[in-house]
Amino acid sequence: MDCQELNKQIYEYCDDSVSPQMYLKVKKHLKDCPSCQQLYKLTRLENEVLRDTTDIPALSPDFTSRVMGSVGSVRRGAGLLYNRKFWYSGLAAVAVVALFLFMPQLLKNPAYVNIADKGDAAPDSVTPLVVSTPGNGATVEQLTVAEQITGNQKSAVQQEMAADPRSGDKSDAPSTPVYGAPADTSSPPSVLGTKLDFDADTIPEDSVANQTLMFYEPEQTMPLRARETPIAAPSVTQDDSEGVVEDIEPVLTPVNVPPSLRLLQVDISTSSRTVYDYASQDGLSRVQIAVDPYIEPEVQLQTLDKASTEGINLLSRWVKLNGKMVTVTYSGNVSVEELTNLANTVRFQ
Amino acid sequence: MTTDEALTAMILRGDVSAFEQLINRYKNSVFTIIYRMTGQYQEAEDICQDVFITVYQKLHQYDRNKRFGPWIHRIAINTTISVLRKKNKMVTLNFDETYSQPESDYHYDYGNPQLFLERNELKAEIKEAFTSLPESYRVMLALRYQLDLDNQEIAETLGITKENVEVKMHRARKSMRKAVLKNRDERGKQDGLSGIK
Image (cartoon, rainbow over all chains, first blue to last red; front, side, top):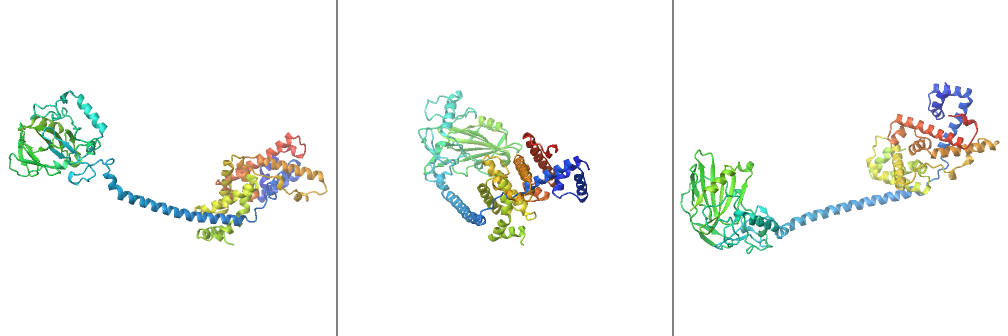
């Protein structure tokens, strides 16, 4: 063993952690090497210093009792914490129940209502959508609200309509049909040329109804029915929520229907509604034309969810016929373009 | 004697007296580590108390398949480091001569006061060199020589491998040796240690 190797083993040697063979080698070298003897002495002194704990003061005599007291506080704190969590959970449960109980009241608040129910089921606190029918003063109540529009949005729509050159002169009269072709009431304009109309005089600014538009439910026109109904000029009546009954002139027979469509039936089983069912000559395409009393001065083009309606499209227009406002709905398993062309073609008499 | 692991099981079952036994079993070693790291008695005792409270609160996390000693010592080290770093204090292991008992050295050579003084002077230099070591070296040396832990126990305490402990321990000793000799050279000490490298 040389000095370099001893220098590597000196710590373990002084810690008595070397093998017996290494111990003998180191001991033999130290006996013959004065320099390594100094190293050995220094290492032993270092170990003495490192192992010296006499300078460490003793803990306070009451240390254990103080810790045990602190632990007791921790345990009591844990208990309180548990109780606190328990009460928090209880309060949360009460809050949920309270929210559930008061939710109907919240929904009655006009500031929170987005959906209007059927008119006959509308709560008293909800203002039903009542739209003045230009020309005859008849009123109908909104059936279903599918979308909300704010007052600002309404104003924006009105401004857009006012800027539409096809919209006609709004200053003519409040009773002027909204799509601006009052002289030709039997020939409704195209969908794009039709505009919305709002009668601000009859709709309160703070009314919930004033914030709602679009009210056609697919179920009202679908599915296509094939009941045998005598073709006749029905006398349709209109019921509003206040029981007012008003006759509608039986002038709703569609004419100018393309020859590719043949009339299957006319359904008048539903009060105030007339439904004409058509089919293509090959029977593959079905089209339905429904004439409803005027409800809302709106025209919309809506493509239903194909997954749920098997690709049936729907197009509704607001038409003024002989001073009576009606809503005509075209629907069928044909494209929107075909429905639009049909709506542009069909006339009523 | 009830093992540490059995005591922990008793504590977890609600036997608070078992925790008292555990405190008495480990309070000195825990305090030694903390005191070496802080150098202040009151602070060390406060941290020591916090360590045992932490142990009590975290006892459910203790893996009874492992030894309890390294676990609690590791908590002591980490807690102390955390406290000292929050106070932005240098973590030093204390060998304050205030608590030293030089009387124990009288037995070396009562008849040679010069050798006695030189020896005490060298010991003070060793302590100074020790305090100048990096924190990790000081903790490791304290675990080895103050608590008399073997490499495996140190490895478990510090969460490193036994081989890593061996390497770091040797480096720590070499660093301390280098610091001692450097200080002596700077002070112009000429003795038999001058030739040691």
